[in-house]
Image: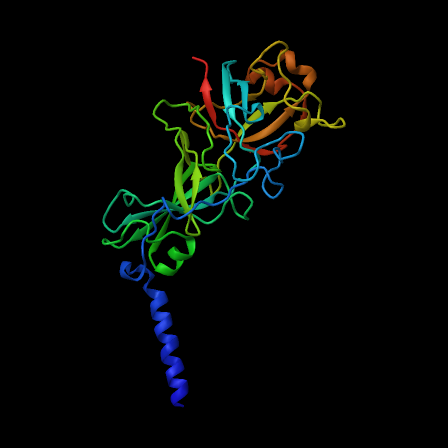
Amino acid sequence: MKTKLILSAIILIALAGACKKDDNMEMTPLNPDTAGDVSIDRFSSSFAHLFVRTTQNGFPAANQPVDFDAIPAFNTHGLGPNGEKTIYYNFDVLSTTPAPIYVLFRSGESTPVSGQLNIVNAIPGVSGYNDFWLVMKVTVSADYVANTLTSYDDIMMSGYTITPTTIIVNCPIVPKGSMARKRFLESESTELSRGWYNHKVVYYFNFSEKELGAEDGKVPTSDIYVCFNTNPDQMDGGPASGFKTEDGMSTGQTHNVPETLPTDALYSPLWDVQIYNNTSFGMVNNLTTATSAPLMAMDAAIVNCPIVWVEQ
């Protein structure tokens, strides 16, 4: 009996320690400068759909910086609804179900904890990952020390209150050192932000050309009309053949037309792809002509393509 009482006491002490994750004295804050980085691969078959790495395309290896401006596949020159010239980035196929991102606020304060990195629980290739994040507000104690919590498990064990918001942010996680230099708004930073994933650091872009809100818990979408060098009903057609472009244009000018721009109320960078017959390429120059072209495929994919430049 005495042995059982001792074991029970040990278990209770262990549980009490686990429940004190919200006590800053029980945990040591991590320094993101020395904590180490997470290896990221956006081109593995476990994540990519349109941009799977092959020996032919030579996409960057795992954890190698990606220059999204230097590789034509990752940035496209298109047209706007009224024929404006546009540029948008391509971040591959994604779900309309956002992933949670945890932002910490001290009790009684309305701004995030200074110096604290946001926390995520998925990276490219891990189930549940999305470039689109639903902001979850975590209310920590007034004396909380920044970067004491550095993982999803830490948050769950802390007992702190988690309040879902409807705010959606477009923040693709990429390898450290990656670059995407264009943004729609001059006020948008092109610098990488840092976050925590399982006590290590991840890096991500921010695309904030338009405030996004969840609709029934989902990321809103907008249509885009595209065509390829080879129609999808032909061998090696569709995305594998590349977007059809104007002859003699060094920029690779497509006649891909989104139905919205960042200045439109219903804009979303998460696009529902409609594929029109490439025989109509020459007559498509705006949304009206794009929607009049015969379709080869409807709702072919959902892709993350933030618009970063529109001709003025």
